[in-house]
Amino acid sequence: MLEGLKKDWAYKDFHFRDIRKPEYRHLFLMLFWPVYLFIFFLTERVTITGGYTMVHCALDDKIPFCEYFIIPYAIWYPFWIFMVLYTVGFEVPVFKRLMRYFMVTLTISLIIYIIWPTGQDMWPKQFPRDNFFVWLTKLIYSLDRPTDVCPSEHVSTAFGVVFAAAASKRFSGKVALTLCWLEAILVAVGVTFVKQHSVIDVVAAIPVILIGYFTSFHKWKRDAGT
Image (cartoon, rainbow, N blue to C red; front, side, top):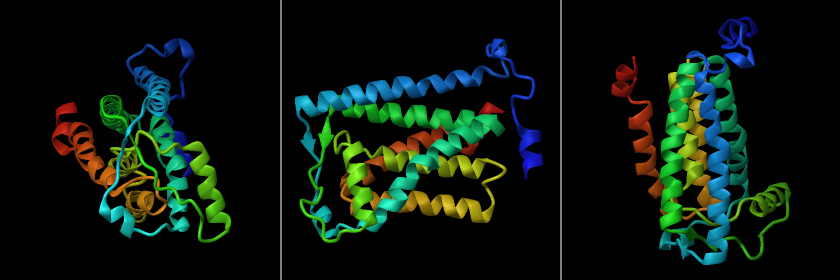
């Protein structure tokens, strides 16, 4: 496997002065992340001080809090970061499609957050148990504010990783791809059980996911790119 990774490493002869060469220009796509994060946190700050619409439905009240779903929620962070770093290093064509997906879906979400600020207040006032998973839930609560929630970016980004895995040569195998699908599904379900998102947020992410898929990973898009 290490030999295969060495063979596929995209920067064997790279020097920083070469960054403008056509074969390395894709690295500029990484500039999207600081721009996105700046706008997201700025939008979140404005949402907190300026007010927002509470997102809630009757089904949310029927879903019990279950701290064990914090595990796939926590895995979500390295899940998508790993795929970005792996593809930029070893599968550049997949990286380009993945970045297009993220740029499309996350920009759509940001526009919606700016036009229609949303939030939720479903966090438990008291936790039914005291264990490691509850501790981890509290930690993530302290880091991830319950604002700018609809559509859920956790859900849309998780499925972006699935599409990238399906397009890659190392993660498109049955076992790896199944694990990616499992993580994405558990994230979509888990965000409602840890009370970080309403069911509405998850459903609202579906059209965003479809737009990202058809503009980035669908067969006709790949053929057009070729």
